[in-house]
Image (tube, rainbow, N blue to C red):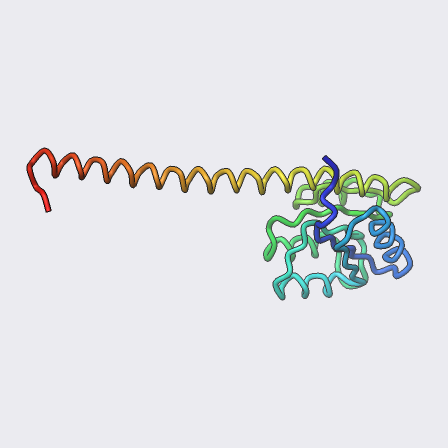
Length: 168
């Protein structure tokens, strides 16, 4: 199963050229719902307004915030959003903290970084698909349990009224 090409993906990158490169690369890979932001604050504002992206691909160093600032703020409003850091920052402590705070992955910008991003989107897509399917199954099981419980109660009441001769 390939990646869900309808996922809402945000690209948060303050370098206009690289933002366009990432967004256009994703579009060429068939992703239909990609939005780009040139600042962390712009992204956060959109999420606070009610939009809930499936994935945010973001630089660590933004002019107005760090990637972790954006991650923490977005997660308050959209807990299921996954984050992929795409950055030149090779500091291992920053990478570890990004993962610790909830990032799915931390990718260093290099010649194959965008291929890595698409691969990770595919992995996240599978997880999202499984989570949605599990939620649907749970809902169906709860509905079946409610119907079964109602049937048992109805049968028990019917038996009770028949046993004691209580008819309408």
